[in-house]
Image (cartoon, rainbow, N blue to C red; front, top):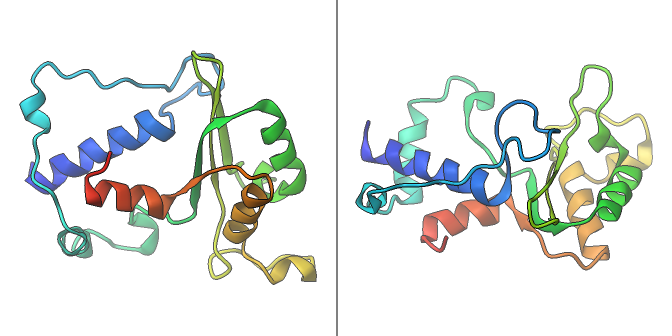
Length: 170
């Protein structure tokens, strides 16, 4: 593997460990949560990779835009509660999914009792036309961010997480 691929693997595992979960049976207690255990820390001493190097690497790998890894539409909340999730689903019902569309939020109870939550919303260009004219004016991602602002809840967007990785501040 190239150094850049080791760096990407390390970063993906960090994102899963810090903000998400992975695998099947995610609704089951403690399924999907990971902890990265490494005996030899020197394995993780990988040179920093610039945005330009990443762009160059992915440029030759992408066949279609859907093949490209992209966190731009994601919002991550490290500490949530059940009421927040209920309010989120009630106000932003597009997150619940529908026939042929998967739900676009994930809440996982952590061993410490807190909930880890991440949400995905499409930008206006990506989303299908809404049947309701009033909803066409804002994209889903902006509506999600506005929801959390109104609730005074601190979030990290996918872009924030990517920048954190590129700056090495994780």
